[in-house]
Length: 375
Image (cartoon, rainbow, N blue to C red):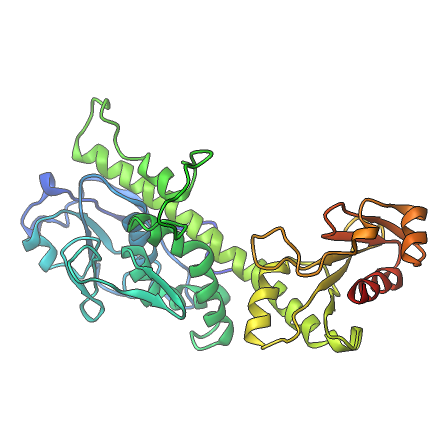
């Protein structure tokens, strides 16, 4: 059973405070707005005095909503109170501060990224400047993932997932918040369409609309709570996907790569023993395992039991061009015509682009891949 349960919002309560609600600190224990708080189950309850996390009030973004959610999944800040304010005197006395305050100092749990001279990145080959969410993930992500896996933080799978979740989920949030273009070009072309469906955009839409008659701090705090829920649920979904799907498929691809010379002396054909998402893993593992020559074809059984597929590997992730497309003379042919042209029985088809073909048997698909390497 996974530790990040679907009951991630338990019945313990915390407050939201904005500038209009700031009172002497001795009075802050009196609640003004209550919401359920996210928490990761642990093997033993963490008994900490209620800590307080500060972030700015006013319009919010995905990074601080997600950052507040994530930091409250940790033992240190489990069930912490969220205080929304820009008052420096109040922020100074809080246990952690995110996205406000002009200070990045993890030793004192200060995680702002707006100050002059801030250039912190995730590391491990990533160069995108971090947002407050990225800073929280950098310092607490392994703890959160280890809880999901129910292992120690030093387990090698924790590090793999730590990098994968950043690459596939967190980095985009950092980039959007810091205004970093996805494509590095001096004269970006006009987009063919507008994409306002990504997480940062959806969180932004939860801010109070200018025509909303109730612009009170209570209404704004409720909107921020919804933003935390939205961003946090997608973060948990991303972690769970990587634990339940990404990590097992990585093991499969790694094992199949290690056996590539048992398939063909060239080492350029890989056979999946069990179909799984393999494309992104292949590129990363080729680099990690220093595989040379690179894989040209991947064979796997059709998921509907209709024989085997031989797929040409793309030149890079997200590209349609293949490293070595199936032979031009095979493309667009099927069944008997294709079998006759290829000199291989049981052929089913080859796509017009040459990126994939099929055969009724494993032996036939392997023969197609071997022949394609020579043509």
